[in-house]
Length: 236
Image (cartoon, rainbow, N blue to C red; front, side):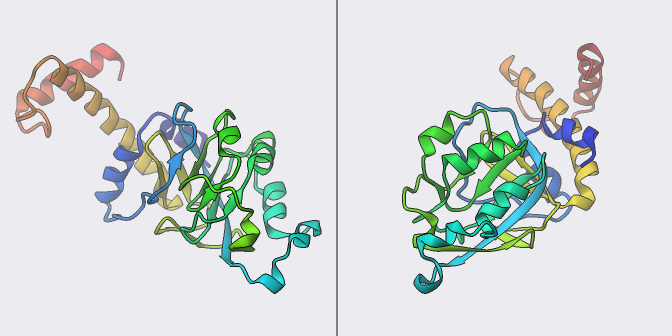
């Protein structure tokens, strides 16, 4: 992805990005019921690399499938591109784990930007201690084989009720994860930086005791003038 766009997205919130996308008619880009295991990390930003699970069928999904080096889950961990975000469609079902600490650690060591599932992770306490963004629904100890069968890589998927296409830009922060269509990522990032500067100005004024009326939104012309002066003074 564009390095400048990535740098911009590292400094904005998913809430701000939601608003920027809403202005463009996109209302359903925030992945539902997915939370960070370690909310203290910097933003997760990268293009999506996807994997799709389907319901497990017992005759096709015994523990021995992991002996196959071409098993889709194992293959995904070893082929997800450096800098990408590995996004899994686990059917919003956390009854079985989408992955565990060993696979997540391998992704981290390979330089992947982060991992997202609308299911659950096993070994979640260990994953939470890694300096690596990981988002899931809730902890889930059973192996994925008990309920999920990995099938497709790098195809359009649904994750937490959001359509995710390979190459879409995925951003995660302490609140959750949002998906930005790749074609508009540059313009959305640029607008989000502008919005963040204004919201920082507003927050500062509110903490000083100011009313939001005329300030947020800046319907009072004096607020516009004051914001311009604030930006100049703060190098924003």
